[in-house]
Amino acid sequence: DVKVTQSSRYLVKRTGEKVFLECVQDMDHENMFWYRQDPGLGLRLIYFSYDVKMKEKGDIPEGYSVSREKKERFSLILESASTNQTSMYLCASSTRGFTDTQYFGPGTRLTVL
Amino acid sequence: AQRVTQPEKLLSVFKGAPVELKCNYSYSGSPELFWYVQYSRQRLQLLLRHISRESIKGFTADLNKGETSFHLKKPFAQEEDSAMYYCALSGKNTDKLIFGTGTRLQVFP
Image 1 (cartoon, rainbow over the protein chains, first blue to last red):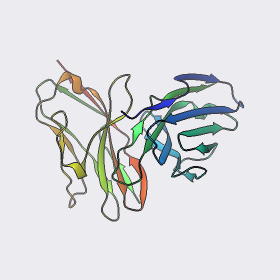
Image 2: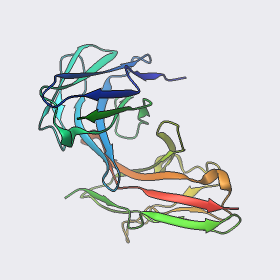
Image 3: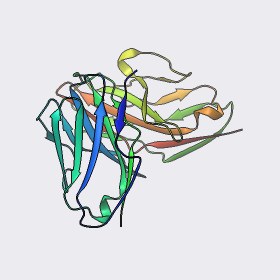
């Protein structure tokens, strides 16, 4: 069974803080993704990575950065959190190939005060 | 532009009624289409995908290239089908998924 875990289920931070969201997968997947999920907007891709040390911008990368130093771990970084980054953040992983299933983590609900 | 449209935010039906969740897409080329589902307090997971041509939990979806649609159907809804459903597409030159905005299905007893 594919396991994608995220470091926190709930997180509360203050405006201007640096925030790290961690994601780990145990299935040796090449691809990893970070999305934010907002009511009425669906899932929007923030960043993704095809391999270690590789990253690609998604649809809404502004205000975010990522790090992939090891194949199993993909971190999302909010350099200076803002209230409009309050959201549910979902991590996913998949093997290579556009027909392949993406496996999702449980999500981190981030509140920025 | 690549886009997935789910026109209904909420769909409410009674148990035993037929269900159709609509999905239309815009894509130049041959996309792969998916339906993902998120039950209450559970993680998002794949329900079915076009390439597999399968029926999962009684749900089916047919790709209509002429109408650029991939509607999800079930002949008799069950209460446990209540969830958030997302249609998504990907294409040959990318492993990214493009999601629709989702449809919440409520099945009343």
